[in-house]
Image (cartoon, rainbow, N blue to C red):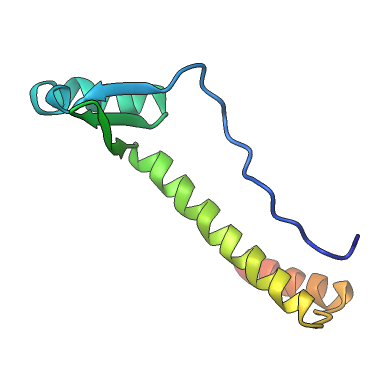
Length: 106
């Protein structure tokens, strides 16, 4: 079991309360909502007729989410390879390749 990678959850900064705004605020106070998104760096939940309609996040927050999704995809692929019997590469070879790449970028 020690050899198996288990993906459980991404650690996220926990907010005390979610920020929820009606869709009329988005229409009438778009600049205020944009400022709130940037300042809070938290998702803003928009409701329509009392039901969840959409979520607004800053570009930075969205980019970070995309990076996490990409990483989770790579981890899932690695886990699937491992489960199918792929032994991977020796650490010595990986480190050698990394050193070569780093020296090329300097």
